[in-house]
Image 1 (tube, helix red, strand yellow):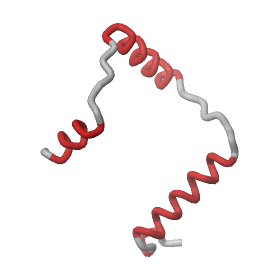
Image 2 (cartoon, rainbow, N blue to C red):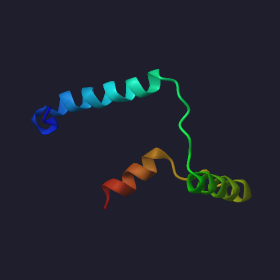
Image 3 (spheres, rainbow, N blue to C red):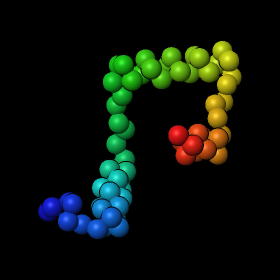
Length: 66
């Protein structure tokens, strides 16, 4: 199958079907050591300052204003 020959809509549907097949297996995805360390670091930083970050509308505005 030549993926580029598919329409955008067909590629999106293919991606959704692939994702659904992964989710259907109900298998826990293991994190690597560095991924776990990064998540722990971020959680610790959040617990210190409780900064919830930016709202989606602010993030989107920053992206669109570049």
